Length: 284
Image (cartoon, rainbow, N blue to C red; front, side, top):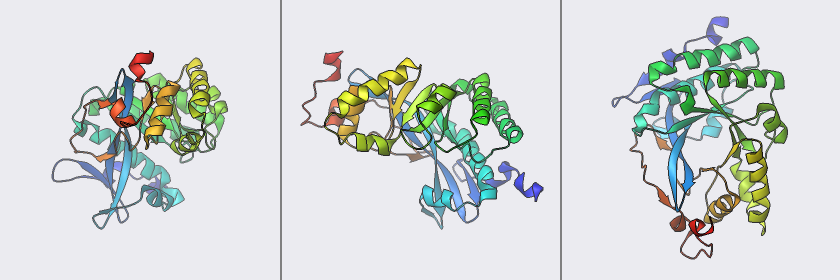
């Protein structure tokens, strides 16, 4: 039984006909997809990073990531999470654009044994050079699940010691609260897209969002808003002074090997021609 739990991730990774690596778990073929993350600069949004996401395929068709991950047996979760992270790291060079950072997810619940959790992080860091990746290019997103605070703090210290930056994912929901910000002192706080979409329905959203962003800035964290799907989401985020943006309105996840479009996005075009917002460059 122990040998099964310690099986080699490399044995589940294969290479397709164009050199893209994919993983196999059960009936699924797991492929890396990357969603762009943008930073506002003047009148445009510029791609500065991507988030690695898994697109599960079965019988040649893409499926729901949520359904795939929900169906993984408890004993396989650590293996699959490690497999996904390795795929994202190995396929990152296939984006073909220099200067981008890579965000990857880390679920603190999949490994609650301190020794194994720390060994996993050290192993990942040790092999980054083989992939031409510098630790400073990586941002580990701690997902919102409950976890032992002492272990989580140790994991974060280990990653920081190697030069990896830390983000708190899904802020505003579950366990991603101000208490976790105080505990982990993240480099980046990622505002949950569902929470933010609901927040944007309020008439005074812009006025109330800016103090939240300012308070996170005061704690030394940059602020990323995910789930930007409508012009109103973009407007509230920009009015609030956020540092980074991600969502379908800006760019959808694209499979590894897809030509990455690194052209800046015009903010006014995204907001819509009917927008009454004063252009940001005239307010600053």
